[in-house]
Amino acid sequence: MRCAFSLPNITQPYIMVRLCLCTTFFSFVVCNNHPFYTVPDGGITCTHHNLRTPAGTVTVGCDAVCNAQTHIKATSHIRKDCVTVVHEAVTYMHSGVNYTCELGACDSTVCKPYDLLIGCWKD
Image (cartoon, rainbow, N blue to C red; front, side, top):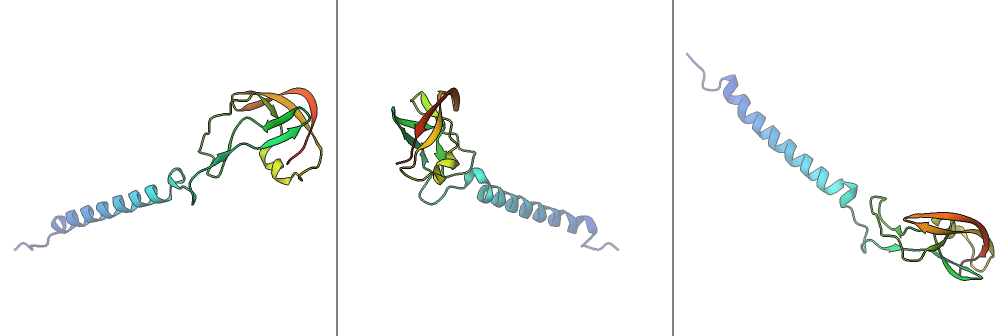
């Protein structure tokens, strides 16, 4: 006498249900928690920091600062002159205080220094 609920008959649907649940869970995790898909509230904005010098306004570095993960690549600005100050340092600078900056020129996203120092300040 054979049983209608033999092991191969029960195992096959169980495996299919389990596979379907795992696939659904994996898709949910990948699409909702992956850093490439997260966008901050208000969207992504990219800006350039500027410092004043006796020769006029100069851009800090050659790349933009964005309010998203580092996976964002912003196009470099048009101006060729720059100062080799780190973007994070600008936030600690006090307005109106004279600092000494190294002048340079943009080569793609890198500010290559001229070995020329110039006074600079934050407005």
